[in-house]
Image 1 (cartoon, each protein chain N blue to C red):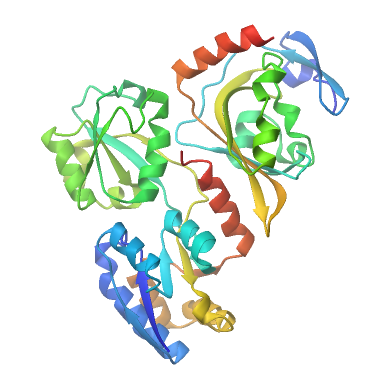
Image 2 (image 1 turned 30 degrees about the vertical axis):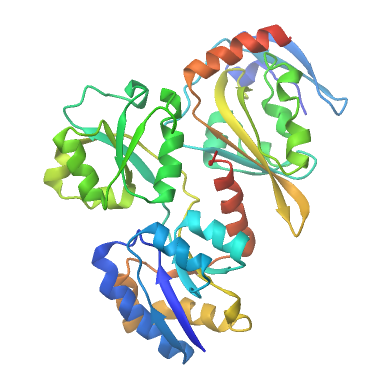
Length: 158
Length: 248
């Protein structure tokens, strides 16, 4: 996955971070301190294969992530990972969904342009004939109270 | 064999006669006896399903999930370009301007439609509302829900968007929409049970060709469906997975 470039954020200066992912890869991102409001009434929906590679993204996902659909399909879902999200915030995600349980949490997502948006995310396994064939992630507008609590918690987990 | 067909209780009352005509048409197409039975309440439908008294259902999305995963029904078709959406409205004079203005203790008027409840409950989450801190007042229909708002006896109403849009202009002018869902992938499904094993292609073919004739189109119009569209199993499974993320 390529590093974020200044042109991704229309030349705006961002704070550089290097994100390291569980598969051993890493990526430089340029983070902007600007939040985009969650679109009213919409759900952001994506599906991945069992390895977390995006296979489907709905229009709300495309719009909020800032990526083109062709940039999302075939890319690891962790392309959304914001450096403010501690890895431990996702603890239990894989344990839960592999066991067929739902996982939910408040997540700060990184856009292509370095800005961010908060969501309440829920992930379920897509089980067909007893086999996990992928995962569906649905994000919805979060409570601001809960987001503020998550922010405080995530600071302590870093 | 005699079959029993029904439609989800959220059917539009103006389409009732159309559904009886549809049932007559289906009997002729399949050369089978099909009794058409309507349920006013969702719990009555759920009981009939649990008692295995239903063979064919034009099901609302929430019940479709249960019928497919718990009772082995198979999805054959869906209405073209028609999805289920919900909205939350208030009295136009209400001080509530956005969902976040709804407070703990709010009284919400709605019907027993599980899809509308599911979609609306996630739309009030940003106000820190859940089933534990609101009062749900179940009414018989959306006109009655609107009346609660007009009388000021409810703070907000959960509506099926399609039905809200069909309220009279006078009523709508006295209401204000706070938020309308734009989910786009939750829809009704035409389902058959296992007693139709081996006849699915026959039924699907009949449904798909319905819009090829004037008579078929007239019946479709009378049930509020533009045309039937074949539905793939994976499409419905995706819808069910998605809905499973929305229920607590």
